[in-house]
Length: 401
Ligand SMILES: NC(=O)c1ccc[n+]([C@@H]2O[C@H](COP(=O)([O-])OP(=O)(O)OC[C@H]3O[C@@H](n4cnc5c(N)ncnc54)[C@H](OP(=O)(O)O)[C@@H]3O)[C@@H](O)[C@H]2O)c1
Image 1 (cartoon, rainbow, N blue to C red):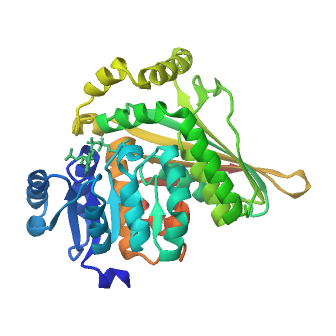
Image 2 (image 1 turned 60 degrees about the horizontal axis):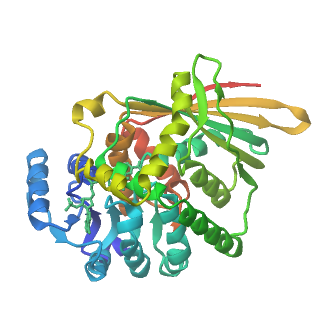
Image 3 (image 1 turned 30 degrees about the vertical axis):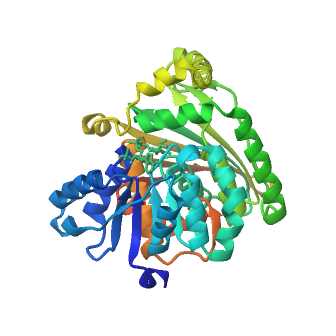
């Protein structure tokens, strides 16, 4: 109903950035002709340039409204949140730039989605705004990009093919082919790596509040796993992203992930030297992220608004292979294997996933759940259907008893 009361259905904050621009292009090509939406950002001229590009894709968007708003101007964000049913954001690093918008959406009862992969930000937003969003019936849905929709919906898709009362050990193996990163992603990774203690404190505060508000409905355990050969010439290493936390939260919120779930999230590397180099790369990132001349020099190497070219993105792809080992009654063991796959994970698919999440929030019949939610808990089947229609692969590739 909010959709009809507010002038706009979707506001895209960050439309002038690298990923935001791709989201705008996707909406220009795929949004329903009658969608009421706006491009929002801090610079009117740059917004007008984006609109001109969209009009070349689809002339009906030549008069799309433009809205000036700044991450450091809460009043502008409150006005934006009050004017739209759904607000989506690509303005990051989210730890630095994201909070005021989440606060505005929670207060205005506006559904919100972003593409953060920063665990400290997600935990801090839960502690500060989950209860306000519950009261005002706003859905706050973080991680609507490659972090963590393919894992989250892939896990949901896989457990649906498992025997309902089994104890499920689910392993996801991520394969990336020629993935490259934008400047914004590098700046966000540097910012998050600089704050391990703050990340840990935010997680503890979140757990304390969760224990009070949401007593776990289902036992869920995330296991880390050790580097090991994968039996096909490659290597598996633990993948330190936010995905396992999101999968575990979805299982707790939705239930029905077997009678109990353990989840492991691994990255497949082709060569032993990559396995040995990974801890060195992580250590180098941690050292480089500490405040000082090295961080300033590194950040200067990543100018705003740049990312992999269309040609690079066209050559990039991902697949996540899920293997569920299901322990049933009387010691019966069944194995279910599923695969989620798509093109360039970081930008082409991320922009599609955020845009489809926005359309889903704006137009689809969704479960009446509010507060901070995972993509699976907020959007579940409706988003799964949208992603499949958009060309992302979700398939059962094998099962055996
Ligand atoms: N999880 C995932 O799968 C995934 C994938 C891709 C990206 N990301 C994340 O998305 C974020 C954006 O990445 P990107 O490569 O698109 O970065 P980007 O090109 O630098 O874009 C950043 C955007 O933020 C805007 N901005 C910066 N400061 C602002 C302020 N004070 N007020 C309003 N707008 C402001 C910029 O506006 P101007 O154009 O005016 O400078 C720009 O539109 C990063 O945090 C990145 O980690 C996540």
